[in-house]
Amino acid sequence: METTSKTVMIQNQLATIPKDIQFDDQFLMIQWKDGASSKYSLLDLRKKCPCATCRGGHGGKVGQATGHIQSIQLISWTKVGRYALSLVWSDYHNTGIYSYDNLRAYADGFDSAFE
Image (cartoon, rainbow, N blue to C red; front, side, top):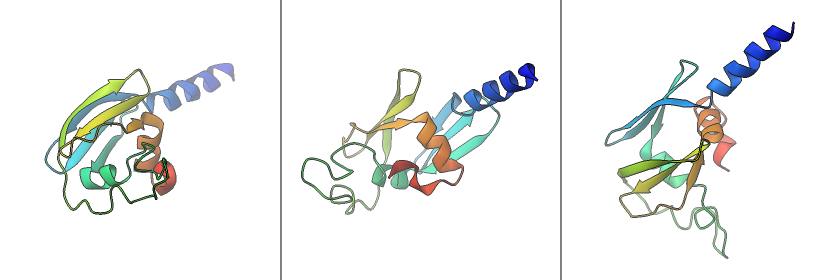
């Protein structure tokens, strides 16, 4: 029984560890270590930026900083420790940290992952 619990825990950990990360003009694609693949619209990710400014912190309103964006390109990404990605957008915004947990949850249908 203990072996089964350890196996389940390892599978859950693999679900939020990227094996490969790629992007093109429209999408960010992540291949997870558990074998699943996720594909994210760049425009959607930019509008869901989790930084304080985009989420309405500092006296703003949610969507005020991103609501006007009609198109966006991803310039680059970097890993933040072992838990997240930092994305650099063509509007030079780069303060959002997208956790692997939230990215995977969002890809698995939990639309509230970035709210």
